Structure formats: C-alpha cells, structure tokens
Image (cartoon, rainbow, N blue to C red; front, side, top):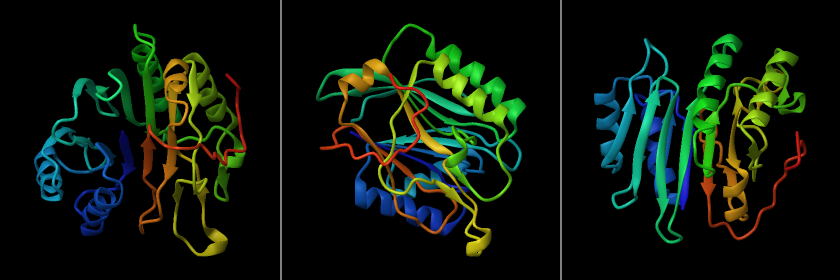
Length: 248
C-alpha cells in the first residue's frame, strides 16, 4: 500500500496540479493527503476530480491559509473518523493482510503556543483504544538542531516539546529514504534555509507488523516542500537518519 503526504501550498497553481498528476503516474498511491490547499472545498474537489480522484474528503481553509484534502482510489477501504482545522483522522484497511489501522494526517501550526494545544488534541486521539496508528505530518518543528540549516534557530523549548509529544504518544519515527530535508526556501545558495519539517511516526505494534515499511522523500518538484511517500511493502530499509531521539 502506498500513501502520499504533501504540503502543496495552494491548489490554484497549475504547477501543483501538474505535480499531483506526476505523483499519480509515477507512484500510483492508493491515498493522497494534501495540506495548505488554501481554497474552499468546492474548488479543491473540482481540481482533484480533474486529476482523476473520485473519493474526496476536504476541510475548508481558515481565512487565506490552511485547508486539507484526503483522496483515495475507488475500492480502497477508507473511513473518516473525525477532522479539525489541522488534521484528518481515518481508518484504512490493508485488504491483502486484513489489517486495519488509524491514520492521522496532520498540519500543525508554526506558532509554538498554538502547536502545543494541537499536540494535546492529537494525544487524546492516540491514547484512545487501539494500538495500530500512523501520524504523518508537516509538524512545522524539528526534533533536533541538526534538522535545520541556516535561518533563525528553533528554540530549545519547541524541540523539547516535540520530543515530549513523541514520547507521550509512544511514537516511533519511521526514518526516511532520500534527501534529509523536506522544506527549503529556494533562495540563493548562501541564504538557502533547509529543514526537516515533514515526517511519519507509527505505533510500535504497527512497526513490528510492517518492518519493511519506508518513508521516501520524493524529488524536488519546484516548490518549497517535498512530498512524502509511505510504502508499506518496500523490499528494504536503508534509512539515512543520523539522529535517534530514543530507541524503542
């Protein structure tokens, strides 16, 4: 099973729609999650239907920012449980293995105080009965200082709170294949800021059931964020992750 998460930075751009088509053609994901669609649901649905999706669930933008969209192929068993301005939670069934797990597709706020409140909301969901879940997101924060190059340093407090969220949720970082950084500002070389803001966590039980699952950073597609590809059926894991906050 393949799932793609991407901060697309508005679905009004023709380049964005073109890139979604390219992702579909190259990787054929069963599920795609988009954040920062920056449009009302009717326009988002129209754009996604033009790409070829028929199963669509949207969360409207808040003002000029935000907006979420979850799309999946016909025949894929997806059930949306709950949603809010910053997340969509849904159940998805691996029909081949007859395993169902919960996915939290998330886009957290860039402001520390608002993000702290969002951590608490997510932990309430994670702590509910059930031990199979994935949290895949643009967290808008890093887990260690080496996950950012140049630009204003992230505060120690914001990093520590992210680490606490990971521990309190008993989350396992799935690592990555490919380029380490997921976001950069495409400025001139001496001013380029690069960060690892997008990642995926999983529960320990689900990680044990899918030991070969991988997270791949897809190629630079001309925008500030790289899409993430979750593949539960990868052959090998060759993680380039240097930082390990806690072994589990």
